[in-house]
Image (tube, rainbow, N blue to C red; front, side, top):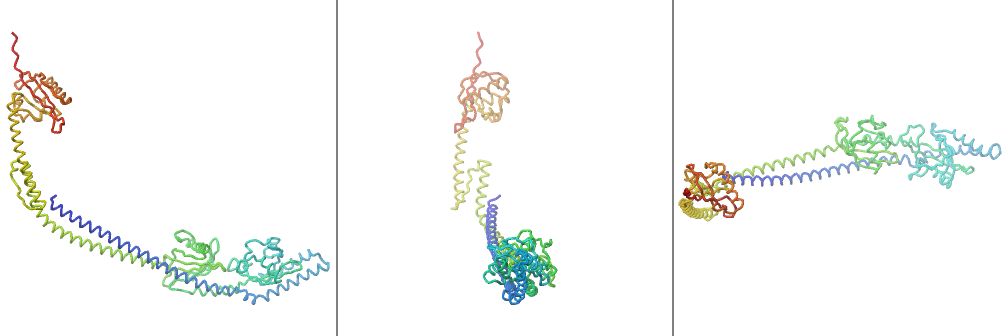
Length: 577
């Protein structure tokens, strides 16, 4: 790859990387701001919806409370039912006094008179069979039940169970309150809640208004009461009818009970067929606040814990005709009305919030796409301009460099080109490089001349030495020899010895082994071996006696690189006389 191409590529990569970093930062910033905006929009809109739902439920709650309190007001009930209840206890009092008189006349014992009186009052009924009388003692701290016609299991029982904490606004013990009231005033009215005998109640325990009177002679508290369900039913029917018609947009209010295990529906304006039904159908098993459970049980649970709360779930969205449509995400607010044990609720479909968020997300992504396209287009233009500029600049750099490269290649091919010079005199780095190259070429040329002269001198010396000289590497492969060695052992020239081994010189196995052993010994010991007698076979096949000297061959750093050997031929011995 040429320098010009490298520069062009480097600039292009640098521009593109910079553009990528800028694009990544810009995209991240846009998406981060979009995420913050989305979170803010969701929080603001959800808060608005929650406040709106809370206000609406509180308004309906106040309406129900006002109507209920009017129906259950003690002064109203006393005015409406007081004379009737007093008249009933007048009859009961006359009956008790009659049985007391029989005991006093000695006709019966007191115990018998009391037993007869209890049975007589047990049988008394009014108000369509729902009205009755009961009698308890004046025991402290809690009285004992003497007679209760509908719950005979209570007779003889101390009335201290929590189920009797149902009187007044502060849930006092009903019978304890009756004792205190009659002890202080002799008689009085009590408002409380109690199961309705016929089981046809709006609630498990219906509001009741009773009148109690002390029968001092026997220490009895006699009481009777009436269910005020007619007044309450009338008021509640008016309330639910009015609430059923309330709409804000497509939204509405519903009312369910807080019963266990599953509440009942009191009023649902969109699905009136649910009214009065226990809400245990499979369709109400939903993902509520992220957990699978019965929707109306979830309403009850959250209102039991805190009195009110928000619930997230999916519910069929009304169509334009007002009928249930496809399920959509919904947020509801519920609040418990304790006096009736009702759960009042309303909700709002929040799919519009998700639509707004989706639009915001789409707008942010469109902005991201447009920004990326602009950055890429700008980057492309910058790359084109940068490449053009680099091409022009590179041309001024690469021409002298090309000359320098060409000359270097020529010198590498043949040393005769060492006399050539670049001659560039610019003051930039390339000019300095060219000047230093010319200076280096001069010194190399001088060195080559010196080496050549030294080599020629050495060659002359080696050629004129009357002995055979060789040198090998550490593997005993020949690196060179002088002309005398080459001629004696049949080589065409001294250069022909390079790369050969003793086996290629025609010596016997015994001679080669001995030569190799002595060469190895010198290299292993790192010390010379001088004037050792050798017998070698020359090119003519004649064995000649020699004195062989070997010395370790080392480089300039002192590292052992081979062995240098000299063979000195001995004159033939004179024959013995």
